[in-house]
Length: 345
Image (cartoon, rainbow, N blue to C red):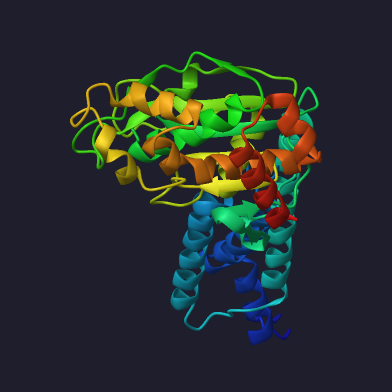
């Protein structure tokens, strides 16, 4: 009698093989291991180079929120992985792939922003040093238009802080060329603070100058709280990189691409005597006082106007005396700008 042929018995995989097989599956934990380095690498690149990498998708707040979401996915996945491997060769590979993919995406966006759109290379604000007068000195290439240093104003006519700052900008521009347009008016009333602060509408200002170029993004529509839109990648780059203050985002002022000021140049309450409620002709009086350098409104504005002028002089790299002579500056303006230029050195 023939012996029965033995049937093949099922041989379960060894425990180590089972763990390796489980680690290769696309579990929630593995998805988290992919997303965290992907978002982290992209966030880091966009933070270190807010322009050109972070112009299209800024590190703060968008990539920071994406990174936080990825971390939540990873933690949730690890909590669910009871009895399963939490770290393995497959997971290490997933982390490497995620980090590499994040760098590739960041690099492609950087090329798009820098090469295609022409955005400048800007370091993060946290690496920059404060400058006198409440300004931030930026380690970036000069921002010029036709070889002239650019003054860039980002604000809105409803905003009393923008309204107050507009006079210093107007005065500085007028000392380097001929200003036209820019009718005097007032900021919005309640519920805005400092209701009806006198201002000059910079969105309609035109500057004719051989020394300075002026660019402006100022919302002048009828919606309270609306923010302005930028018109080119350089403007968008500076706003993305440095205008990150939640409570003081406008006005935002850039001089020569190397000096940045976030928030009001001075307290709008200083112009309260000439708001529309107290003086129906107050805006016109402030304009006359500032441009003629005579009267109390000019004394309110002069310090910040001189600072803007000094930063422009620094951006030009020219001595003060010939500029003062060519543009017919007053003795007080000449000496004050000269003193401020020395402080920026």
